Image (cartoon, rainbow, N blue to C red; front, side):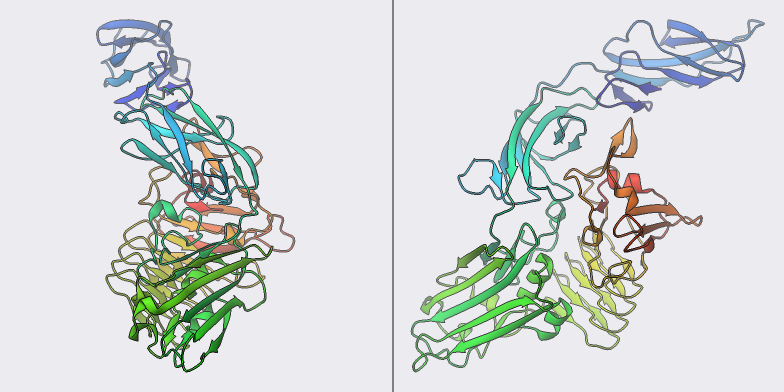
Length: 556
């Protein structure tokens, strides 16, 4: 049975709901037999099977709202009547919801509060509904004038919508509505907003949660660093040029204290740092300043920067041995490639333990050899570095980096981020909604990555399924411009790449004939500078590119 009344169309299943009062029934019977369609005991009409036995029937009078039990019988030329089919039950509902959804806030609303201008190129849209949703009702958001819609996440009378890719600079109009289980759409509301990409970086002291800079990560509440490190910084355009950390004391002997950080981790992340210390006069007004830049002189990736900031310490005991109120300033300043900068100042450091004399225990690292690392029940960061390493995370929301070599990464429980790095890596996310992330490490067909394997990739039940896994290849694509609501959507129940979208030139996802799905990448989508190469194999998973994109399981 099929529904051809928008917005939800396609094949219906028994026990479902529809807003189509004249759905089309289809079936097979004896060739040229007469098919009678009944609703309970009421004859709705007849049709005739063709020479191949196929038949269809569409009621000429619409079904009333409510429950229906539809059956069919076939009568042959001799007048013999078949046994009735198993009942196909259906609820017809043609009444649109009266509940409305309104967009009320935009993350990082810059300048004047409520001016609907943000520097966040992947903003979270949030709002309210006029009443609690009924069973099967959803809030939907459209950014293309209502051509395509995607579901928001609803809690009570509040909702949030998370982009799966970055917006380009410019003006947008978000439409919001409530849709019921039958597909009836309530009245839509609209709100215009502007993405302004000239915003300065965002920096914080003691408020590092949510500053990872990973598209889609907020949806899954991945990796909260706020209880492990003091500093955080991110830039909506991912183009921080330098970060400067500074502290100064007013009346304390700080001459033996200075900023320090993990050199091996900095090297792994493509960063470098320098420290300048001022001992002051007799220890009074002593200070230390750390400057962080990219090793290649370019911009710094948001995620890598925040990972490194977690290793910053104050050696010599300084802060932990004094009264925090004696500190005149603890600051972080980030400057982007356009010379825009921001500074955050802690003043009196409230949580001294976040800037200890030793690296946080949550950072677990190996050596240049072959290592086996084991995480804890908390939120850990595991780094294998060179060698063929095995990284076993625990029950928390963890971050795992294999580094060079052919590594084995096991995420364990929790929502984890797994980054295999160079080499042919074997990745197992474990329980939870995990992100498998690829970064550019070299200028070759895979961006310096190997041919990896994911052993337990969990397919989504639909768009925005927070329990499903994600693959993030956005950093590898050259010249591709993504849409914030994704490259594919469901059309008549079928996952379909949007008209005009070129993602199919960059990625393929095909079956290998053994129950696995192989994802290949052509980084420039043209086969010129780069050629199509296997990036990752999803073992024991059969799917296609359209479905992965429509369910937001490939982030581009």
